[in-house]
Amino acid sequence: MKEINEIRDDEIRVIGEEKQPKPQGWRWLLLLLAGIIVGVIIWQVWPSKPEPPVEDPEQGVFEPSKPTVEQPVVKLPLAKAEDTGRAFVEMADTVINDIPMRLYIPHQVSLSLHLGPIDKKDKGIIFTAQAADIRADNGGIVGAFVLKGEPKAWGLSKKGYCAIINDTVTVGVADNSPLFEEATEKSGYFFRQFPLVDNGKLVENEQKGKSVRRALCVRNGELFTMETLTQESFHDFAQALVDLGVDNAIYLVGANAYGWATDSEGQRHEFGDPNPKTSKKWRNINYLVMREK
Amino acid sequence: MQTSCYLCLAMLKKYLIISTTTDLVRIAPERIVFISSDGNYCNLVQSDNETRMLTFQLGQVESMIREQLGTEGLQFIRIGRGLIINRNYIYYINIQSQKLILSDVARFTHTVSASKEALKQLKELIEKEAKE
Image (cartoon, one colour):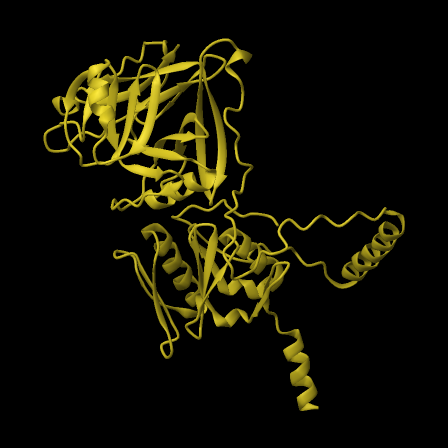
């Protein structure tokens, strides 16, 4: 069945409005006759096709069934890093639950965090996106934050975390994570964000409203980031990640937060607002950074 | 004669049929108040205040309405990604509070929410049709 997804939340449409002009009088009869003749010819000539197999004979109208992803589930990674021999980010668009989304799948990269405005001239950065939120009132980093072993902020307001220690990236949900201390001991990195998916299960968040959403995800041991191409609620975004088969995911700063991804051709694809944030309020702006290994 | 004509009309009457390999739902369009998206499923709210869960996405249900009901499908309006409403039951629109009340002003009243822009367009559509 044809899917109709091309509608935004700020649009309406009358269903069945697309009317075909009706042929009139003798034209109508002529067309009908021609149609019948063509139909008979096709019926006589066309080889019969076997019935398509029934995918799920037990599926009921009123019974919950396995959620379906409209576009084919993307297998990660889509291409091997050896294909090019250098670091790059593979981008793939998909639609899940009517939500258009973009996957950024990094290859041959190592992760770290960066504190302060990002250097747009740094071509060694293959992918970057804003990591931890900063407070609107005093510009402080929200939640615990460790930069190369140095704790910059403490706090548990958000239960999702990402720890990067000796090239091992852990994305999870916990009130207290020993990885914070480990990151400080081993020159690692650590930040907190809203949890979205915990061991394949959706994590509800209280935040309301809709915005462009981003997430750092792990599926089957593969790390990637996702971005919605439309404004979505936290719940819908998290549900889409669950339906994609994501094991663990935490939020990355959404809306017009700036970042970019560099594709296999070396072309940079920016997202968010590229204007530099120079005021004092933004002194703690921070980024998840992926560089070539 | 009157009875047979009535039967003819009844036979011509269109129903929305939602079918899978094992189940089938057949419902008259005017009995549908609205259909809301719920992840991969939909909830169909009927005029008898019953709610049916459908294991189809809203876009698929919209296609069924278009294909099966033809011009009778005109009574349904898709509002954003999350809602299909029966325009016959539009009772109250408040753009500022993003509120849309669907009611027959007798047996049922349902309040749903939509974006301001969508409600503005809906209001304009209703106003335009009232003038025609």
